[in-house]
Amino acid sequence: MEKAQFHTLVVLQVKVLYCLFAALGLSVIAVLDLIESTNVYAAVAAGFSVLLLLYAVYLLMRGHKRASPYPEWALVFLLCLFTLFGMQQSDQATHWIYFVPGYVYFLFPFHVATYVALVYSTALFLLIVQEYDSYFRLQILFTYAACYLFAVMYAMLNERNNRGLIEIINTDPVTQVYNEYQLQLDLNKEMTRADRQSSELILVGVAIPPRWHTLKAEDYEQRLSFFGKKLKRCLRKYDTCYRLNSDNFIILMPHSSSDDAERLQEDLLDDLAGSERFEGLTQVKVVQDVYLPEDDIPSMIKRIQEVLSNVQ
Image (cartoon, rainbow, N blue to C red; front, side):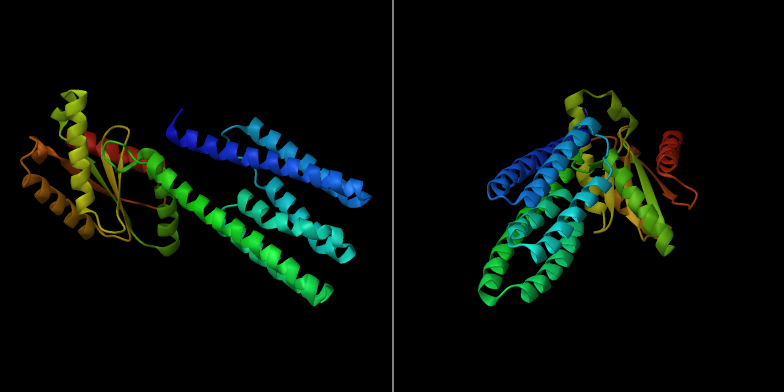
């Protein structure tokens, strides 16, 4: 299993576990509501519990395949609708509002969940101000604010850790530059941006010396590690370097021109020529390619690979 697929599987397992724990918590709420003879709210809690259980099963059946976001949006919409309208009918629905922030931040990406939570919190605040007296108003708002802040802090930490994990997973362990999987993700974004802003997108292909391929594994990896450091030293702040599965390298240069690519090529070759640590550094081949509107990701990578093969 590839590292990227393993990461997707871990994220899926976390979401499934949360759905199961949330379903268990809602089933407890349903039992408590049933004991207090509030049958309507007990039925609603049991209904949400069953929906979460079914969604967890659905995620497990999908496996590593991307699941549709519509069930999540439907669940969140129904939960928000129930809490906002339920509080106007009975105080029994009040304890449901504390469940919403964590539920939203766990199901959606951080930036999406933030917008949803802010809209919901605004509507909830206006409702509480109108429907409750000052004593209960302060209690509810204080408890909700504590739950909301806890959910936000947890989501921020989770987002930060997730980004760090993605960066580690999609980074080549030998050269410490990104791998081909990450190139496909980033290239898709940059191609869209180039089309939208009508800006140039340059790709620079770099081929290592051919004689390195005949070396032993340990010597080969030492040279690749050294070469990766040299490449990273020549990059600008918004340039990114990737190691392909063929052991060629591609440098992604957004908002750049051919002159920028030429300067990068000169800097790289000058830096390599001044190093005497490994032999063959003067045999490094560098080519550049310009993104065209009719290009797609596989065709661009294949075109650079073919050019590098021809110049060797």
